[in-house]
Length: 225
Image (cartoon, rainbow, N blue to C red; front, side, top):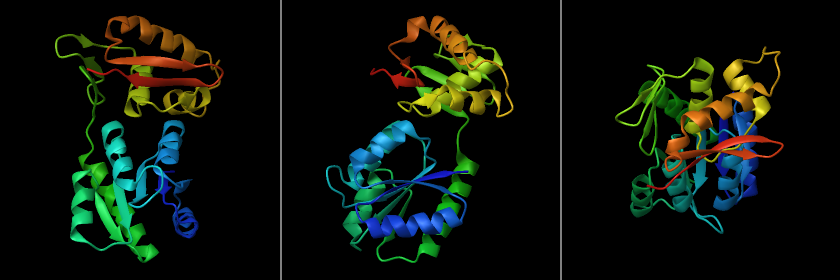
């Protein structure tokens, strides 16, 4: 199931999109402002964001800029104003598509599905964290000079965390994503693999750090270059 973020301060819009999108088989996560949306994205894997321009505390343009800096997902911007300058600002912030209120819910569904098709065709197998490049196709990691060849589970675990920097994953989530839903071993195997990754990349803490959230799981924090 693909998860959609709906960030809009209008509860009626959120309710409408929840009904329409869950009927289409999507998971829906809602936020009434940009700050709540960021908090939610750090906790839950989001595959596409639907963002209203006018929101309290943090508006849609600021949220779009944050998403573009931290996640590689499609963004659809919603606005009640049909003005060229608003669309220009949205596209400059990295918006993939734009829809003016009021809109037909079915049109938004079409646009969401079209963006997923487009991203599926053009998405890169490369994940970059400062100097580090994770190449999922060739199953290798490089800093531009040294190439690291890791055991498959270590590689998949690091790639999963690196794809969503700042997002917290529980041990159970990582087990299902990396080892598979039918895995019957000890969930502490995640801890063992994390320890090995930390040892391998002990000299690269300026690029990224794997943080432990006690009693929950792990996340990657990206260093500033």
